[in-house]
Amino acid sequence: MGTILGRYILREVAAAWLVVTAVLLVILLANQVVGVLERAAANQYPQSVVLELIGLGALQYLWVLLPVGLLLGVVLAFGRLYHDSEMAAALACGTGRATLYLPVAFLAALLTAALAWLTLLLAPAATVRALSLRNEAVRAGQFAPIAPGKFRSFGGAVVYAREVNADGTLGNVFVERNRGPVVEVALAQRARREVTPDGLTHILTLYDGERFEGVPGSTQFRMLRFAEHIVPVRVPQSSDVVTALEARPTAQLIGARALPEQAELQWRIAMPLTCVVLALLAVPLARLKPRQGRYARVWLAVVIYFVYLNLISAGKVWIGRGAVPATLGLWWTHAVVALLALAVIVGPGLVNRLRYRVRRL
Image (cartoon, rainbow, N blue to C red):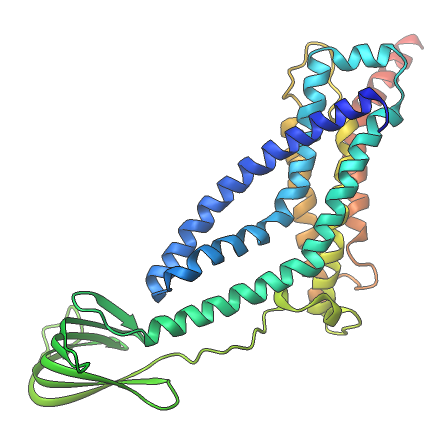
C-alpha cells in the first residue's frame, strides 16, 4: 500500500468499483421507484413517505451491489492494466504478488466491514422501518378525508364524491364494492361518512339514490331506490408489530433453535465473506493473455458471482428446511466457489502442460 504502484492500483480499482456500483444502483433504483409508486397509488400513500421508502429500498439492495461491484471493479481495472501493457511492464520490473493483492485486500476489508454492518445491523432496522412506514401509510390513506372530484379506494370499496361540504357531508356520491362475484354500485345525492371507534369499519350513509347489484356478464341485475342506505366497509387491520424474519435483530437470532432463524443468521454472516472470497479470486481471474480484449473476463466474473449468489440462496433454503445441518452453515459455499474459480483459472494452464508433456513423450 505504501508503494506508488500499490496506490495506483487502489485508485484504479476503487474508481471502477464506484462506477459499477453506481450504475447498478441506478438500474435497481429505477425498478424500486416503479414498485413504490405502484403501491403508493394503489394504497393511497402520503407523498412524504414515498422518498423514504425508496431510500430504504436502496439500502436493502446494497448487499447485492457491494460484492458484485468489487468483483467487476477489480476485473475491469486489472483488465485495463493488462490490455494497456501496464501490468506487463510492472511484472517485468519484478513486482510481486503482494503488491497486486494488497490494494485489493485493503478495499475488500473496508467493504467487508461495511457489508457486515449493513447485513447484521442496518438492514434489519431498515426493514423494520420500511414495514412500519407501509403500515402507517396504508392506515393514513384509509383515514384521509375524501377529496372532491377524486376516486378513493379503501377496504375493497371505491368512493367518488363530486362535492364535499363544509360540514363533512358529500354530494353526488358514487360507491362501488365487490362481494365475491357480485358487484354493487350505488349512486346518491348526499352521503355521510363515519368511522367506528376501533377504526376498522367505515360507515357510508347514502341518501336519496339508487343501487344496482348483479354479476358482470349476466343478464340478471337488481335495481333499488332508497331514501337511506348504509354501506359498511371493513378495512384490513393494520398491525404495528413487525414479524418479518428479515426484520429480526441479529442479536435475537443468535442462539435461536428454529431452522428458519438459524438460516437467516447464517445468511447474514455469509454475505460479508463474499467480498473476501471474490476479491481473492478477482486478481487471478482478471489476468489476460496477449491480444485478449480488456473485457474478456467480465462474462466469467458475472457467471461466477451468480453461481455464488445462487449457492448461498439455495443453502439458506436448505438450512431452513433441515436438508443441510445448521452446524455446517453456509461455509461450504465459499469453498465450492473457490474451487470452481480455481478450476476455471488454473485448469487451462494445467491442460496445456499435460498436453505438452504427452507430446514430449
